[in-house]
Structures are given as C-alpha cells and as structure tokens.
Length: 563
Image (tube, rainbow, N blue to C red; front, side, top):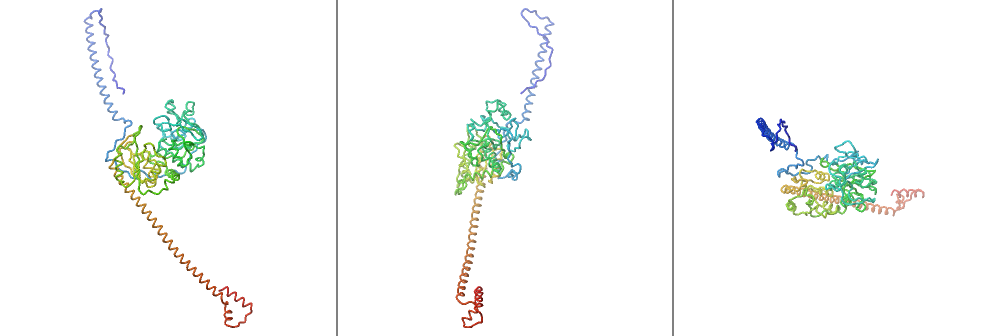
C-alpha cells in the first residue's frame, strides 16, 4: 500500500564548513552562527518525527476504514447453525408453472448456420472467421448472434492442458479418419493472446493449430460447464430431442458429428442410448475446437441457477429413449425387497469437494431406519460401473440419498415417484430439485453446512427425520400401489363376472333359440307329412269338391307356402 506523505517546508540551511586539520579556529561570529544552525536543525528533526507519527496514525485509521468498507475477495458465505437447518420439501422455493414450461414456436426451432465456415469452441460457442460471436455473446454484447439462455459462456478456459480444462487429454479419432492428440484448443505454451482470445486468432496462421479440423456437419449440443458430468448429461445431451424431431436424417447421417463435450466411453454409451450410432472405434463425438460450413444449433436449456433448468419435454424424450434401449432393465419385475441407494462422494487426489466426513454415522442411520430394506452404495471410486449398470441401480431404487453432486444426474434412469433425499450444499443449488420436479420424483432436501468445494458433515438428527418422512412416503406409495393393484384385480374380477353373466344370458338365449328352431323343424316335418289345406282335409274325409285339377294344384301350392 502507498503510504501518504505530508509535504515538509524547505528551510534555508547554512553551509557547514568542515574542520580539517589545517583549518583556522572559527571566529566568535562563526561559532554563534554554528550554534544557531545546530538549534535550527534539531527543531526540524523534531518536527519530522512528529510528522511521521501523524502519518502513521492517519494510515492506520485509513487501513481500518478500508478494511471495513471494501468487500473481502472470495469470502465464503457464513456457515449456518444447526438450528437454522431445515428440510425442504418438493417444490419449495420454485414456481411450478415456470419450471414445467417448455419451448414452443420459434424458441423450439433448430437454428442452421450454412453460409460460411465457422468454428465451434470447447464451450459450444460459435464464431465466424473474423472472430464475431454467432451464438450467445452474453453480457458484453447482448444483442449479437443467436440468443442463448443457458449458463454463461464466460469463465473457465479452453486451454486443453490446464488443470481447470474439461476437454479430453487423450488422443481420439473420428469416423472420417481425422485424429487429434487431445481435445483441440490452445495450450499453456501458446501466447497469452491466443490463450485468452482464441476466437479472434483461430483462423490466423498463428492460431490454426488450435482447431482439430473441418467436418461436413456439426450439431452443437455442448453447454457450459462443458465436460462436467451433470452439464453434459442433463443440459447438453437432452438438446438432441429437437434435432431428432426436426432433422432426423441429419442425426442418422454418417457425415454428422456431435459436439458434446465428452468423447470417452461414458459419453459414447450415453449417446448410443439416445440413438446416436457411435463408438470409440467409429467415433462421431467432438470436444474442443472444430470447424464446419454447416452447423446445427438446437434450442438451449435454461440455467438451473435461474430456477428453470432443462426443458421437461427434452428430458422425458431422452428418458423414453433410455428405457427403449434398455428393455431388460425396465421390463424386469419389481424386486420383492425394496431398495435404498446411497450415493457417496469420495476424497480424491485433486478434490475434497462435498465429501461427507461422518459417512459411517450417515450409513448407520440409513440402515437403522430401513432395517428391512436392501441398502446399495454407488460410489465414484474407480472402477466405475458401466452406464447400463448405473441405470439398473437407479431404476430399481425406491429411495436415493446422498450429498449434492454429479452422481444425481443418473436420476434420469429412475422410475417415476422415486424419492430423492438430497443433502444440500451451502448455499443451496437448485439442479436436482428442478430435475426431480421435471421427472416426477419426490424431493426431500436436507439443509447442511457443507460448502461446494470442501468436505463437511451431515446433520444426523435432521437426516433421521428426513429418513422417517421418506419411509412413510414409500409405505404410502407402496400401499397406494397395492390398492391400485387390488382395485385392478377387482375391476378384472368384476369384468370377468359381468362377462360370465353375459355369457350365461347369451348361452340361455342360444339354447332357447335352438329349441325354437328344433320345434319349428319338427312341426314343419309333421305338416309336410299330410295333404295341404282344406281340400286335402276334405279329400281325406271322402268329400268331393268341384275344382279343376289345375285349381287344386294352385291352392295346394299357396297353402304349402303359408305353412
């Protein structure tokens, strides 16, 4: 800090003559002058010391004032006390009408850029050859480019070898034969201007190496935070819904590539569940920087921090595709023993974020409350289960519990009315409360003091209360299902009884009808065995009537028809 300096008046300082060994003794006048000079110098020195003390005091006062007025950078929010923690139920704090609103009209249309060569950045932003943003310029230039309402493109880095970069650090190839040593983009060894403004220099001689290559067509699905599991699965991948709806032939084409932000086997498996024909050996997924003359931009998903989140129609479309591609998982009969799934975050070499420090106590509380249930644990400790195995875990769980984290993204595989108990980070992030509402899950949020980037403990008494509520909800849900099944059985039995009654009536009528037919046939046979009409009767009695043979024939024919 620069210290304040007070100006000191300049005094006229007499010249002091040095007293060398060969010099004469000073005269009386000279001695008097010397004494006066010494006194003046002493006064000035005292004055300087006093001024220095004043300056120090003023600086201390100023420092105290600045400390009280200036905000502290990167200050953590105050930790809530145990009494401030509560349980948040279902839609608390959210507007259901806004949350469940979906895109219609122009907002649901896929945008197509096919007029010039453009580049897609690691963040999913699109730039022209001149560096102009063609999608979501954001806070800096809100009126430029196509509108974008997802989480901001600002922040983060596209430097592929940065610790905070999310692109692939391993080589991969595309179906068309193009190969890259890593997710394309600037590196730490590039110039500062290229690292900070790659969108301006990507088409220059010094920046062409940051682009992986040019492909026939790119579907941009990536949204911030690119490469992060939740944002990849929920925010980005679900946008394919509008492409499948409006451009199914583009999705099916071998010449189409999907900028998705995750190209490893996990990304490949999820893409296949969405109907994209891709694999590590025949890859159609992209991350980093790629260029094309035809780019498709489906509607964005809103940012969860705006308390809106992903479009519910897109989510349900993705979920339906998952269930269609995993028939054995979703057609399996419901297990006799209900399951509660615990999602556990583990400490890694690079992160301690939201690790539950009192996990044994948490697990003990769960096993005590759900003593007759099967308890399964899904951990992020390698080796991780495959995507289909993860879906199976979430599909058979009646209750899911854990601290806020990317593992809850797999709720896309859960069945409707599954109960989620989220140990909320502090401050609360809305991602999974929104996802629960959109997927038709039951949400219980337990307030905690666990920060986003650090470990913390779960408030066990509050957790036990939430577990009790979840058990009651599960039992009520089970009884509702049993009642529905019993009602269905009653309906079926009632229908069967009514059908049986109808069959009895129909059979009786058929029997009566058959008897009538038999009676009519027997009567007809008796009538046919005797002469027809009155003439016949007279003839039988021996009487003679005056009719010609022709008249007798005609009468008999008419009488036969009547009988």
